[in-house]
Amino acid sequence: MKKNRRTFIKNVGQYSAGIALFSQGAILLNSCGKSTQGEEGGEEVAKEETVVKEAAPGLFFEISLAQWSLHKAFFAGELDNLDFAAKAKNDFGISAVEYVNQFFKDKGKDKAYLGEMKKRAADNGVKSVLIMVDGEGNLGSTDEAERVKAVENHYKWVEAAQFLGCHSIRVNAAGQGTAEEVASAAVDGLGKLSTFAKDYGIGVIVENHGGYSSNGEWLSGVIKNVGLDNCGTLPDFGNFCIERSKPESNTPEGWANTVCLEDYDRYKGVKELMPYAKGVSAKSHDFDAEGNETHTDFLQMLQLVKDAGYKGYIGVEYEGRTLSEDEGILATKKLLTKAGAQLS
Image 1 (cartoon, rainbow, N blue to C red):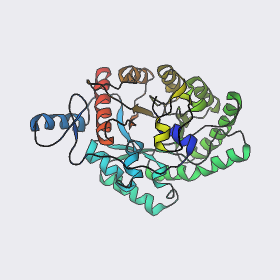
Image 2 (cartoon, one colour):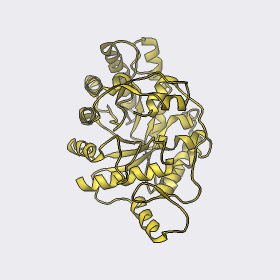
Image 3 (cartoon, rainbow, N blue to C red):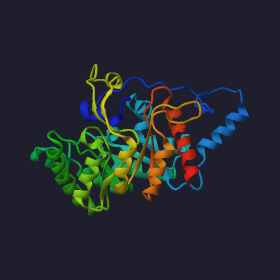
Image 4 (spheres, rainbow, N blue to C red):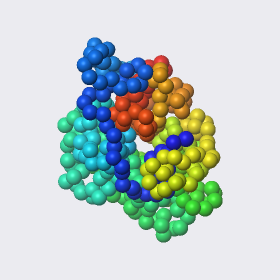
């Protein structure tokens, strides 16, 4: 399996990005998932653009865009965090966004900056859904002092989420120790943070994110034991690698070449996490000639989501390397729309 965002962050923290490769001009997807540029096939391209950019009516869920889908562009300085909402709407026809705190990590308490983010989202008719929080400590740390510090580090993001109009923050429940020890610590850490967040009307959600959290039974048990309505999950279609091989180097490229040593059944995992879901992440990497994701059956996943009675946002989160980030986002959105339409 390929590297995913959170596994990399969990192991090496912040990193500097390489150069993002983007095609110039308007890039659209044809029926085989390839890019089409230039003036040839104008009518076909225009038709395809309408398909992928218009909001799909009648779906049982809403589509949002995870900011990490564009992480290469952000890290390379080709895209600014303040322009994210406009790009989501104008380039992809997506009217809801999921922020990643890494791209404004020093602005958590900057009301002027957050106010500009809020204004730009509103100006473009974009809803701010959640903030994915990394680098603030592990809420499942078995060291009590570290765990308390991690809880307190998240307070500013709870406040920022409320200010921006988000419904939740996504956090990490990792820790060192046995499965039972980390579970007990995570229940404590998540419980304390969720109690704080409840007064702000903000949810605290955990996704399958490597380590113990990629075991659906373990994570669902933790959330059940927290027992608070605003503490839930963010099931991710692809983050079910429990243990990964050692990277060649502590770089994005080094981690991209690692392999999963212990995997958890993704369909079983999503089914176990959906009863507590307050968000869903549609992870994608590669697509076949028919536009289907080659690692995950989106139709099967969406059936599990629907069976759980979920009707909220499903975030597009492309992490592939074959298509450009823009192409991958459009391909993932198109697949979500197609599979969702079959079930709606």
